[in-house]
Length: 117
Image (tube, rainbow, N blue to C red; front, side, top):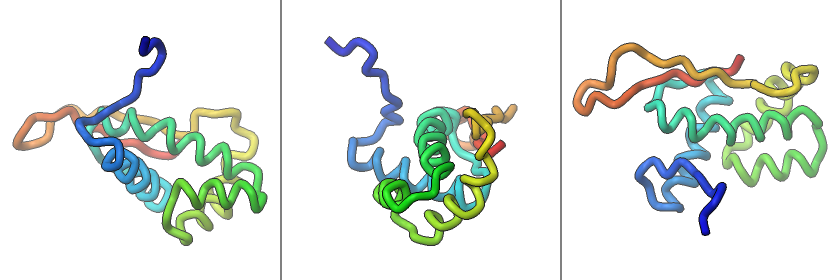
């Protein structure tokens, strides 16, 4: 049975989904916010929040775990040097999803911003 096994599939194969989550998380950490479809924003939210929780404690082990999830060294450094200490006292809820009023031109997909709080 598949009880409690809900994941956001976002219409991708598993390997494509993993690379999509890595790329979206990299862009969120690097730029602070991104605009994407609402489903992708909801899917990447947990991924990013776990990385920020990891970055709150700066250790070699945590840096290696984060580097396995994010492929860019500069973004890992930014995560541990800037983003992690910023949320040191915050117990959770590091990201915010803001829905946009209009759908995407072409397929009318629901669009959202995901931003660091």
